Length: 80
Image (cartoon, rainbow, N blue to C red; front, top):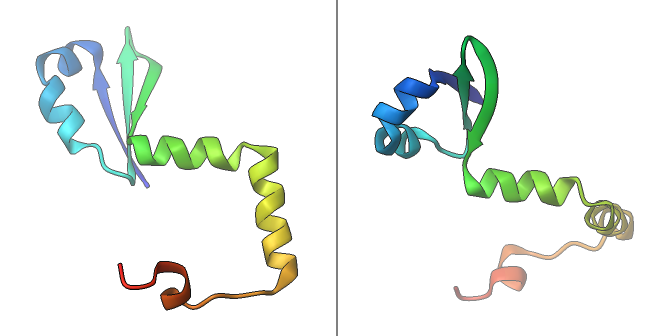
């Protein structure tokens, strides 16, 4: 994971390019008056972070690991 830091002014002047540069492994840190103020991340990454913070989601992962029941790629995805 990498981070890129921009000032509010730099972001304002290059918004489209800055947003295009963000991918799943990069976080854009926005500073104002020399202080880190905001972070912009890829939507897929945000969804992953929200899912991991959900206790119910974590318990389903634990339950699945404990069951030791595994499925092949073909069983899960079929002929997609």
